[in-house]
Length: 478
Image (cartoon, rainbow, N blue to C red; front, side, top):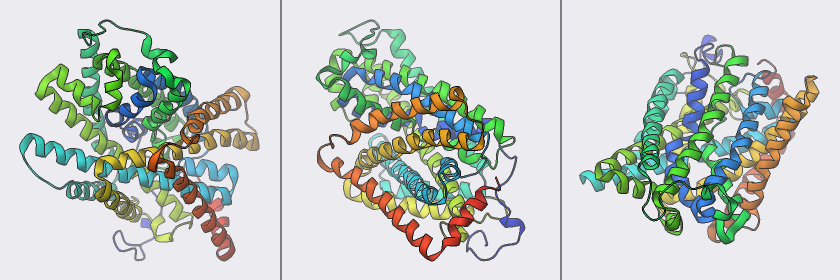
C-alpha cells in the first residue's frame, strides 16, 4: 500500500521494517522515555503519598526487585524472539494463537490509553504554563492535536528521528529533576525535621493504612515503570537483537528504579516528613517543592522538565503502540494494510492509525473531565493493565523455555515466578476492595475490554480461521 492511502505498494515497500538501523542505546532510550521519569514524579507521587504517606519511598524500593526480575524475563525472551510485537509476540509464541489474539488486543489497548492520556496531559500542562507565565492563551486541545500530528509525522519519517527527539526530551527532564533532588539533600531539607531519616524506608511511615496503603502505592510505583518494556518493540530494527535488546533492557532496569527511589526520598525530605498529609493533598507537590527551593525561575525550569518528560513518554508509548498495531496488522488480526510498511520501511499506516486513536481516546474525555483528571482515570486503568500483562509474561517465560528445551530454574523459573508474585500484591490491593467513586468502574472497563477481545477472537475463529493460523506462521519467521 502507499504510505498515505493504503493502496498497493511495491514489493520492496512491504518487506518489513528497516533492519540493523538501531542499537542497544535506542532500546534504552525508548524504554526510559516510555516511563517518562520526570513525568512520573510529577503525576504519581501525590497519589502514592495519599495511600502510603512517607512510605511511598518504600513502595518504590519494594517494586525494584520485581522490575529487575521482569527485565530478566524480557531479556531471556529477546534471545529467542525478535519481532516488533514485543510482549504480544512473546505471549503469542507461548500460549498460542487464541490467547495471543486476546493478549495482543489488550496489550494494544494499554498502549493506546497510555498515549492518549499522555498527550492530553501534555496539552493541559503546556497550556496552563503558557497562560500563567506569559499570558499566552492556547487551548490545551489545540496543543494536543499539534503534538500528536508532529509525533505521527516523525514516526512515519523513521524511528531514528523519533529516538533522537526522545533522547533530548528524556535527558533534559531527568537532569533537571536529579539536580533538584541533590540540591534538597545537600542543603538539608525542611526546617521541621532537618537531617536525613530512614522513616520513609519503613512500613510504619504508612501510618494507619499500613501494608494496604503500601500495596496501593506500589501499584502507582509500577505505573511509574509502565513502558519500560517498550524497547522490546524495536527488536526487528536493532542490530544483533539477541544481545543488544537484552543489554538495553538491563541498563534501564538498573538505573530507573534507583532514580525513582532517590527522587522520591528527596521529595518527601524536601516537603517535610511532618507535612506528609499536606503532601498527599497537594495537587502538584513537585511544583511546591521547586518553588520553595528554587523560586520562580527554578519552578519554571522544573515545570518545563515535567512537560517535556510527559511529551517524551507519550511519544514513546505512541511508537511502541504503533509497532504493536503494525504487528497485529501483519498477522491479519487487524486489517492487513495496517501491517504494511512504507517505502522508507517505516510503519506509516500504523502510525496514522495510532495518531487517530490517540486523539479519539484522549481529547473527548479530557473535554469532559479536564486534561489533568484524564491521567487520574487512565493512569489507574493503565496500572491494572500493565500489572496483569507483566504477571502473564513472567509466567509465559517458564512455559516457553520448558517447551523449547532450554529451561533453567535459576535463569527462568525462580526469577519469573518471584516477579509474578511481587506484581500480584499491588494488583490485589488495587482491585480488592474496589476503590471508591468512579475508580470502582475502571476494573470493570478493563474486564469489558478483555471480553470484547475474546468475542472478537471467537468471531475471527469462526469466520476467518486462517487468521489464527497465519498469526503463528508470521511469528515463526522472526
